[in-house]
Length: 382
Image (cartoon, rainbow, N blue to C red; front, side, top):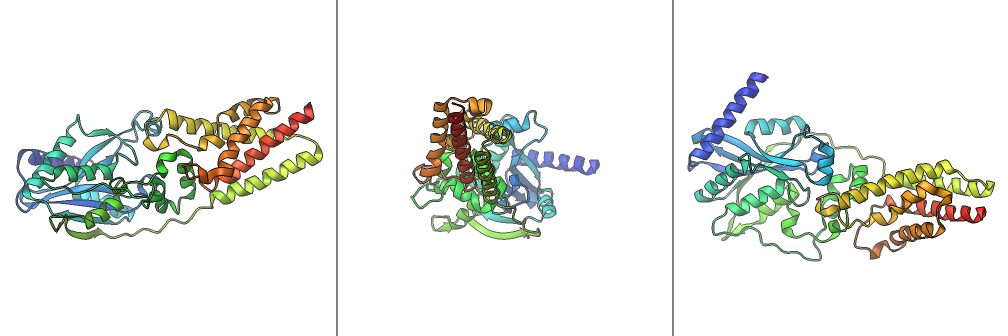
């Protein structure tokens, strides 16, 4: 295994040397590889890479902008802040395909209809991007990822030709709507994503912005014509899908609804027995306090474009940290302010420029109920 990796490494070094030192032959072609969904969240949206093949020069390699190192110090902190360095890597074509064959994910190749000069220009751009000082970039799922990088390389490689004309209509889908079909079997991940994403995710995306998704880039390449000629020369499935679809998880909305119902029953029991379950509020307000800190962190401490201006911070707001600390000793005015903030998305969600996950509404009702109960408890103490 070590020997195979060594020879693969030597092969890639020789390939890069040939690419940077020689022109591509007339038989060379450049293809865009689009890969299907995987079982993990980071792979469920697919993948895009660039294939350069020149049999006359014994070149058959893939440029991959979606590479990261799990051993990066403070990996999860940097990822949450939008500061995790992704990089352009190079692998052999066979090694690239092997990974997707093992995972049972389909791979489609679109061979681009490029002039010899445009092939050379793309080749030069990729070699330049692969240099140590250029290969790393700050990843952003929606704005700067493996698919947008490939889109931009294609655009920059064309000579006296324009491939994509940007336009946005009111009927265009939002970023949130675009990713929803990919998370139908990952409802809890969708719930978490919706909690972390702000209102910027709900604006209509332009046709150019659609191409943060590999499938969208592939589909738009299929429809592009330049000078009455398709940019895609041929398209073929080179690896067929061979994986079982993921089973759907239990709906978060069902779980939060059951939780809300249980809290309502406990609250009714409190009022009937004229007691107070402090432990219940300690658990509930500990959770909401941590959630409010996480949402605030993603808004104010992250470089991610779509985690800003998050209206989830209305119902999961930092005032609830104060309520958690003091509970029945909280000032009444603070309790009323917190209750009013929760009421805004609960009662007027259709007026706010952000889509809320349906699982959040039982949580909003739950916390409104408990704050109302705290106000009632305070009046009893008085």
